[in-house]
View 1 (cartoon, rainbow, N blue to C red):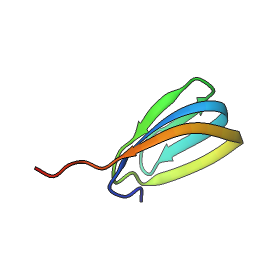
View 2: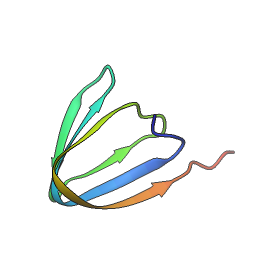
View 3: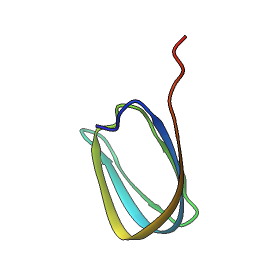
Length: 62
């Protein structure tokens, strides 16, 4: 399980495949960006050596 943070990722090089349990599978490569939401459950499979920039953010309780 991912935890309580959002994670924004921008792929600089390489390839990754992300499969959400009970959901879709997505492939990302150089130039692609995506956000993983809190509570994500699934698999992260590195297909090629990966370089990424990422930022995590915790939602603020109101």
